[in-house]
Image (cartoon, rainbow, N blue to C red; front, side, top):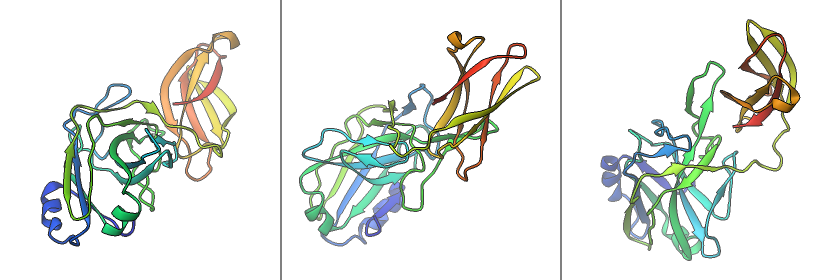
Length: 250
């Protein structure tokens, strides 16, 4: 990644093309939109698109909640969504990498759902970690028609043939902490459920019920896990002074 150059915005990208080394590969990708999350809402500005490399032995890439991947390589994560789609993005790959790492396989583009829910109910893309990978991934989806064949010294453009959706739920890393409910308080018709041992790359929510056998009502108020080890508090409607709740991933 540190030897590669990503340029966001077609005007800037085209002006930078002349600066690329003669044998470097330049990839340009975009989507027409409107691109959506699994719940049908349009992607937020600043949402991420991933440029991925699939070796010949792989047919798909599986993205984990912490941004890692298996079955292929996420070569670039670009937080560039604007107006419900991916604008033109140019990515420069050194000729040596084209020859040594990316000579036998296919390229693709995935839409990522990196929405983070805060305690105040606000929602925004989580952004990138210092290493350039997504801070969290709730779900992902392959962008239809985004395919390209690259050779050293070429500029290859590809655009999706239709709208895309991040609908495949990300996998949970095997070393993810096991969250648990530590306290429940009923105040003013609401249940305040305290949860500890959460992961900053997962979203947590509650399912509620009046009895242990009826815990089926999904509470639509998720929250992202803590980044510093602090407990989080989930809030749900409460009927009377009692209720039963189950913690789940969103």
